[in-house]
Amino acid sequence: MAMTDGEHPPWSIATLGAVLGVASLALLLPAWRGHRGATAALVVLRVVSAGATVPAFFVSDVPVPTLVLATVIVVATVFGCVLVAPQLRRPAAAGTATGR
Image (cartoon, rainbow, N blue to C red; front, side):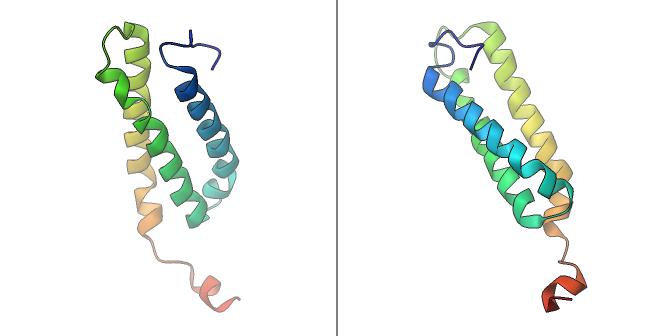
């Protein structure tokens, strides 16, 4: 939020990005430890965050540094989702289904 002039990106998008970023940080440790629900929620939050940058590619007069940052966010999101996709597909551990 500190990097916006209020126009590129608008305050609402910058605030949304900050909130999604903080929520993502909160999910990071459980996802790292293998909690599939946290991993799925983290992927959804990051995709929504990347989706919030897409209008920058279609609105006129967006500064080049903002377009570069939006591109980095989208590429990093796709890369991160590809990296965690195998964890979301694997079956739950045998002991977790029976409560052992």
